[in-house]
Amino acid sequence: MERIGRARIFWFINAIITQELIEWGFVSLGEKVKRDKVFVFLMLMTILQVGCKTMNNTPQGDAPEDIRRIFIGIWEGEYMDHEANSLRTWIQNRSEDGTYTMIFYHHTKKGIYESVQKGKWWIDGDRFYEIAPDVMEEADVYEFEILNEDEIRFKSTVKDYEFIDRRIQDFHDATII
Image: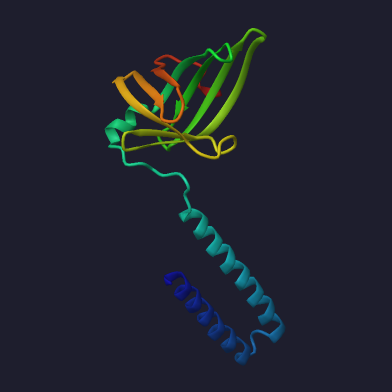
């Protein structure tokens, strides 16, 4: 309601100013129509911009800052997928702004395949969430246990999937992450 009220006020002020300019002879009626079109376009762009800024599909979570800070940094992990007979390893950089970049390495009999994933992460309650919008429709959800400042155990809430991330203290190629 407040946005509609503001738009009406802007429109009303524009109409008054335009009418005065026409009456004083500074603007012709043709220029008024052009100016109105520009004004409407700018108003729509402003509304769209404000709407996009307030739209955030990723929850920020409710974790205390000291818990959240433990997750920030560069981590490595691994998981042996017995069904696919392959080892998956990764290096992940979780940033303070809630984004992450992860490099996956799929070790198979045919070789090692690398893929990169970018997304968002957050903690809500006792759950860790991670989503890469380019490849996922819903976030992966994990229970977590902080073993110490450099190790976190994750367990999927929907699959039989568990792993430990270990902080990398001395990772020199951080530019690729």
